[in-house]
Length: 82
Image 1 (cartoon, rainbow, N blue to C red):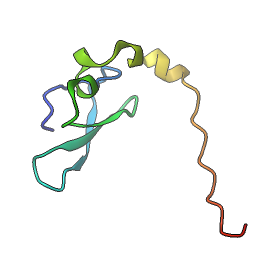
Image 2 (image 1 turned 45 degrees about the vertical axis):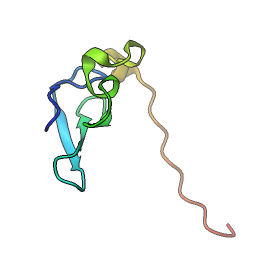
Image 3 (image 1 turned 90 degrees about the horizontal axis):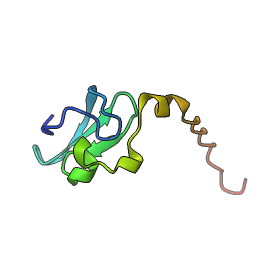
C-alpha cells in the first residue's frame, strides 16, 4: 500500500486491506478498513486519508461501530411492467 498512514482515518484501526489498483499502475489504490469498512482512494486529500486530518465529527470508536444500526438490505429490482 502506497499510503504512508497505517491507520484508518475514521476509526484508527490498524488492519487496512488493499482492494484495487488504478488502471495506470502506481497512480492510486483503493483500500478499506477491516473494522468500520471505510474505503478510500490513496490519491484523495488528507481530510479523507489521514487520521490527523480527518474531521472529528465523523470519527468513530469501536463502541460507535458496535452501536450502529444495521443497514437495511437493498430490495430486488423491479421488472418492467411489474
